[in-house]
Each structure stands twice: as structure tokens, then as C-alpha cells.
Image 1 (tube, rainbow, N blue to C red):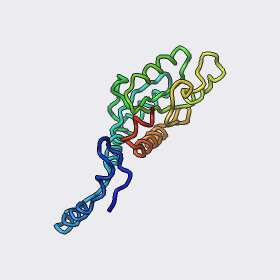
Image 2 (cartoon, rainbow, N blue to C red):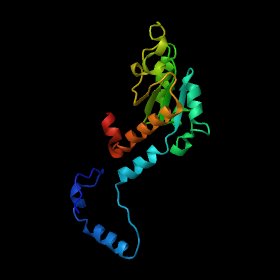
Image 3 (cartoon, rainbow, N blue to C red):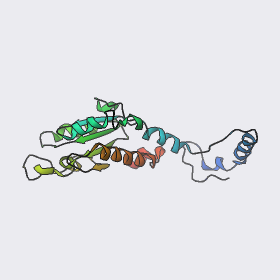
Image 4 (spheres, one colour):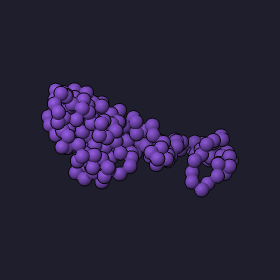
Length: 189
């Protein structure tokens, strides 16, 4: 068992060549009846991060009501680990942009996004947040939240049903699970 391409600060890659002792240790544990699961630290961290996402709600219209429905007993997004909604951007991981964003509100949304800690995610919820919705031709409506901040997941609908919101949340969880946790800072720079 040889591990290649290890990227840990201050530890050279050559130190990871002798790993037979790990295989011997696992075999010894299995002989004694102990089940062993071997995985990477990256996968374990991303599993924990994807199942404990704290959302910041930025609801400006009817999609906010649908977001409230997702937290209700029937759909209950607590089973995904998302139930700790935050009112402070410094404590949130993902911002749900739910509803129409007008030009006057755009700098506020940008400031909230900038105050969030890395890694941060954005879910655009509903037709108004995605493209301006029925108010698209209005002079004061932003033609999509992606003009202000980068969006990770789009949830279409006017307003989207709670099961569509849950599906969008699961798509963000998949995206988080595929990230390389130890290279997050390097990718953004």
C-alpha cells in the first residue's frame, strides 16, 4: 500500500512510503473481530461539513415563506443538519437568497456575503433571485443574484416547493463533499 501525492505542510512526501504497518494493524484488528473502516481525513472532514451547514436567510419576498416551510415539521430540514439558521453572516456557511433583489438591496447583500467566513456558499432560490422573475423588465430589479455574488446552487420555481429546496440543499451537500478541504485557501487565491 503506497500513498502518493500527499500535501501536508512541513512534511515531505518521501515520509509516506512505508505503510505496510498500517495493513498489518488492520489485519490484526480484523482477526480479533474488530471492524475497521479506512478513509481519508479529507472525506471525513467534508462529511462533517456537509452535514452541519448553517444557513443565513436573506428573504425579501414570497420565497421566504417557502424557506420557512422547509423548516416546518412536514419537510424538516433538521434531518440534514441545516436547522441552525443564523442571523449573523459571521456564523453562517451558506446564504439563501430568496426573492427579488432590488438595486438598493444589492450592496447590503454583497456586504453580508463579504462578512461570511470561508468557505461560503450561495443558494439562489426562486425565479426572482435567479433572473429577476416577473419583475425582470423593471429598472430597479437586479437581473439575477449572480451579478452581485457567485451562486453555487440554483433552485428554480416561483416560488419553489419545499421538496425542490431540499433537493437544492442536497446538491450543495454533494458539492461540499467533493471539495478538497486542505486546498480550499489555495484554490480561492
